[in-house]
Length: 175
Image (cartoon, rainbow, N blue to C red; front, top):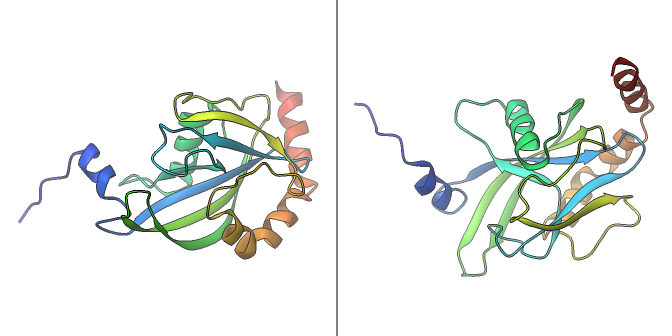
């Protein structure tokens, strides 16, 4: 028996509440110790006024890495130069309307050329910028502390890697 695929707008409404949603979270970095965060506007699905990394629901038929690349391009018009998987986490939250949600967040650190980064969805974000881990804006996404508790050591190692500077230098030479 074949099942009809749900329309995207219906599926989006139910992800995380009628069934566990899967999201790819990408914390972009510049290879020199700074990370890119954006402040979510009142038009975003949730976490209004909070600073967060990029993310997007996993699309059927896409690998995790393909999803990261697509979402990065959609949200920030940038290409991923290197993608490092840091791990996953369960995200349990209650939305402002009282709806409990459950997401499985697949977390990545993504090296980007900082000159490419921009906000491609200006209605969804009020502000953005580059920050060091010891000077982050406030308030953070509600899950950022859990993210750092689980993946902070891995993230710090990635941010301190000289490999990223070599990749950026190689990209600049080839341009």
